[in-house]
Image 1 (cartoon, rainbow, N blue to C red):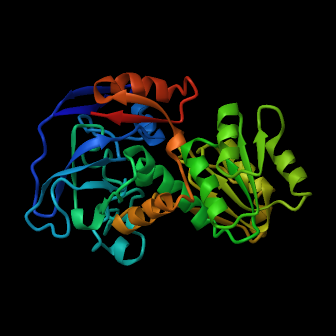
Image 2: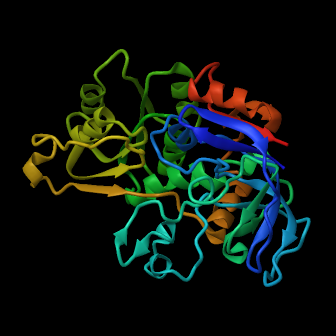
Image 3: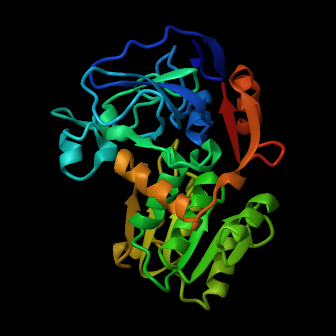
Length: 354
């Protein structure tokens, strides 16, 4: 089969690999649509380490090609998705209610991102086929009438962006600021609206992203290339600050700005993937006396999470299909990486098909 393979920092290439063997609890999916994530770009740049020869990608939409002998409740030929996070359901992390960290715990301590296996610790989805582990815990049938592109955001960015809003514990009437309106930040904007935020402030500098943020529910947009975003948000909130600030880029500057716009007792919900140490400024953190909360989250996975996200789409409350701005065949995935990594031509998300 064809697969996008990590060779070394700066090189992900399309090559041939064997189709995986199917174990008793596995399912083999024929990929009908997948995409490239910002985390894949971190891998490409060498900012997140993976082993050489790994197939990249963690957002699969496909058809069940073959089921393991012990898998019940699914049939070959069924249209399904699987989350970027593929929990087993029986680990310590799962039993503690943190399925996203499945596989991370050991007697040697914890390593974050344990539940993220596709394109991280096992072969991923930018290929003709992908092997889904613990299929009964992770496959979710796509409802009739929904297209691949409508559900393409569910495995990762929709789940991740929504979790940023959920972890922030947004309440009806809250004021929320979301720093960066890339795909995950946009999904956080949608999540904040669904949870009842009454005033959503979206921060970015690209006009197409700010326009998309307005379309998806932002009440105010702040172009940080033209104004100081902290000062502008404090002006919008009449000096009160925001109840929840969501950081969706992964930089010191945006993390610090989130702290500076919080009201006393506010929550910073961090979604960014950071490639260097963070510094918490003394004044922004009120010397540790501001009753602030800083929370992080990793994309929730599992079949029930996927079912719920697709139900939201099926209800018509959310439509993220407009975020797919470019389409490539798998044969052209190297060109897709070049476009997406350099954020050219107004790209939001690309759809990759066989």
